[in-house]
Length: 140
Image 1 (tube, rainbow, N blue to C red):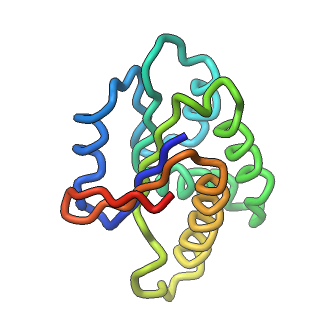
Image 2 (tube, one colour; image 1 turned 30 degrees about the vertical axis):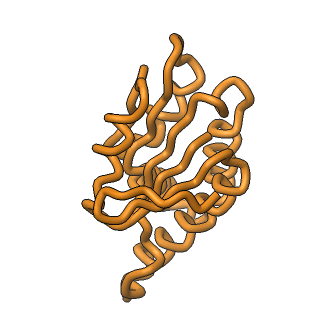
């Protein structure tokens, strides 16, 4: 797994799509679509999950009435860490934790859960990059 992170509009998606052979791209934050379709992706090449923070937000909004996202977050992480996907997976996410702390409770929880998921994924990733101004810096 390879992870790219950085600020919004920092050139992450453009850099990744120009560098890698992408066989399937998920974007737009459709959590349940990602969970159901990801294990069945065939072909050689990389699987791209763009705007990972939106996947987390969609997951949280989908189970909002439960108030506990830990089961869904665990299921997402387990799906992403499946052995047959690990070598082909590229995740792009915005860095949410370096900005202003939101007053809104939901947005603050989103920021926290996104950070925790990214930390766990980065721990399992082979490579982790931060991109600023379109320039990647390898941090793992």
